Image 1 (tube, rainbow, N blue to C red):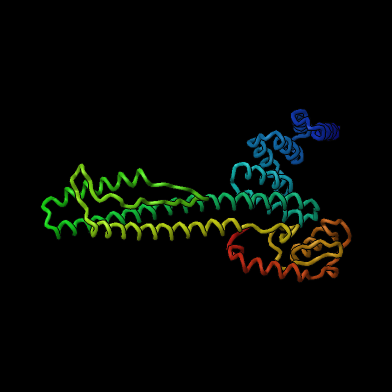
Image 2: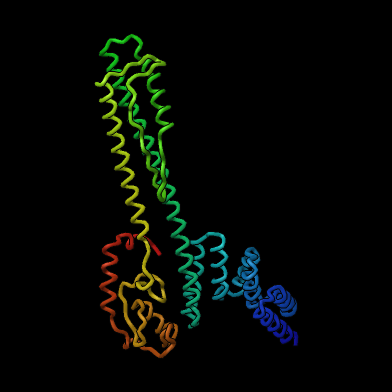
Amino acid sequence: MTAEKGEAIKEKGNKHFLQKKYNDAIHCYNQALKQNGEKAIYYVNRALCYIKLKQWDKVYQDVRHCLDLDPNYIKAHAYLGQYYVEQQRYDEAITSFKQALDLCKIQNKNFGDEIQRLLRYAQKRRFSLMEQKRIENEISLQTYLRSLLQSDKERRMQLRIEKYYEDKDTTNSLSILKQYLSKLTNYHNQQTTTTTNLGSVVSVSPKLTSTHNTETNIIIDQQLEQILREIEQSTDQSLNEMNNLFNEVDIRRKRREIPEYLTCKLCYDLMRDPVITPFGITYCRACIEENLYKVSHLDPIANKPLVIEQLVNNLVLKEIVEKFIKENEWVNSECF
């Protein structure tokens, strides 16, 4: 009688859940737990309510309780994956979703599509996070390289100026040099323009236009000015080449997307061996064969009877996929 009462309370909680009365549903599941003791389904149902309410710490507590009672509870693994996604712990989320999918196949459960969608989302989020870190590292590297180029430019200018004044037998060349470089640096700071394009920092360096400095009484003749101008131009060329290289990386990054029509409806990855069903739906051969063998003898999208012998190689799409891989080398190195 007690068990039946607990189940009745759980069913009442389920009705509240369908009506989106999540707090009322939680109250019912709490009563069911008190009535019947610890049962995995009560914890997992309550965890789903907490997901809807975005109370993620409580989600974690309930799914852990559920998995302690039943380590093979599919929904508990899926909900745990959702918790990890919210915490941006994508590697753990992916592991949880894959465990849920494996259990779907073992237990012959046919609700793996939603878990596949969650898995794909976690993989995309992980890739986006890694990509953002790569962009930040590229910006740091570009800034560092710019600093090296600017330092090298000033070093070469300094050597040229020292040599110039040494040849002229100037007695106070070091003092004049410091004043000159100070003026040059101030001018550079005032004139430098920085633009950013997806992490690319482009510097437009100033040109030396003054040949006479009245404050320090430094007179630069045309010979020295030409030498310094060549150093400046050489640095500008190096900066432009570097910026072009980083811009090319940005352009290639923008192309790092697999078109939806090239992705499998089951694994959401690139279809390297596409096959088409009699219902006009294309899958990866390995995915659809595994689905037919372990889940059901149905086309998972069309929901109609299907056997392996009905699968036909989609040669047109395979050619398109091969061309896409050839034009996008990152496909073979990135993990989705």
